[in-house]
Amino acid sequence: MTYQLNDRDKSILGAIIQEYVATGEPVGSRVVAKKYLFTLSPATVRNVMADLEEIGFLYQPHISAGRIPTPEGFRCYLNDIMEVKTLQKGEKSLIARHMSRTVGDVRETLKEASSLLSQISRNASIIILPKLDTFLFKRIDFVRLDESRILVILVSRSGMVFNHIVQGEDVAQDLLTRYANYLNETFTGRSIQEMRDSLIHEMSSEKARFDSLVKKAIGLGMTALDGVEGVPDIYIQGKESVFNSPELASLGKLRDIVNAFEDKGRIVRILNRVLEDAGVKVLLGEDMQGLGMDDFSMVASRYYRRDVPVGSLGVIGPIRMDYSRVIPLVGYMAKILSDLLEDV
Image 1 (cartoon, rainbow, N blue to C red):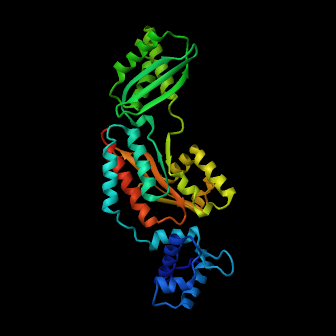
Image 2 (cartoon, rainbow, N blue to C red; image 1 turned 45 degrees about the vertical axis):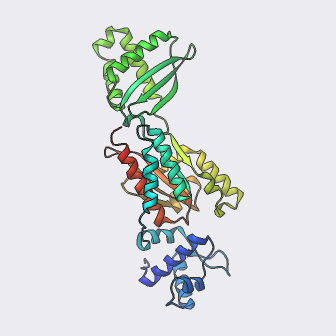
Image 3 (cartoon, rainbow, N blue to C red; image 1 turned 120 degrees about the horizontal axis):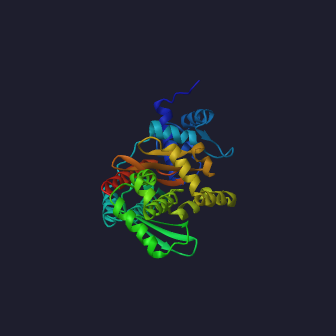
């Protein structure tokens, strides 16, 4: 049978979480009664705390200690108790001022967004960059490195630059330049996805069958595009805020967190799985087990380009982070990014 919290239960759970967020220490009934709920006696608070512990919303680290909220307690607080704060005008102005300096350069825009998220939240920030297919093609260049390797430099209209190396025949640089010129003249202004689809279609066209240059240009173009669709780039900033948190007093835990930040592919998979719907989401408890970060949480959101989700951003910190402040921050930053990406 599911236990239904009444208003008094919610008030006490909310007070415990507010105090725990502020101090990081187990919370006792006397503190709750004296600091938050003056009309209740410590004994009444203590009885309710025992009930909340029984249903799994609190736990007691040892006999003489107060209580600490569990992930289930935090989830109840987020869903039914917490009042989300409004982002302060000064913080909005700071974001708008800094983001306006990066217009036209998507990577710089996203890097600045990551920096601001970390700075304002005082936690680590993560931004997954958009995939190549979401941008408009501007130009491509091929540079011969040696007899078997070619450097591909692909630039989107928004200024995103994708560099990678492909294996290729020992072709002279002047021919590589002619291949690039053909692709640039043919596909500039189209989306990368349209370019990809057209290359597949053109490979079987009459022109490709009878024109060796066109055929080789198309083949190299397909190879070039295939090579840039691996794990998306990620910006992670403010990791030191997480490393310095009391929750990482254990060296073993610190090692787990360092490994989690290094495994970017795992971060992408977790975000993609959870962020299937619009809006700001909070990942905690079992959501974070895949990263080995059970004592931590992530507040995350997708951001968009022309109403199509193209990436995601988030703040990672201890499970006791100030959600009422971080949730509107993440939501506002996602909106700002979506607005800035509208025309790229």
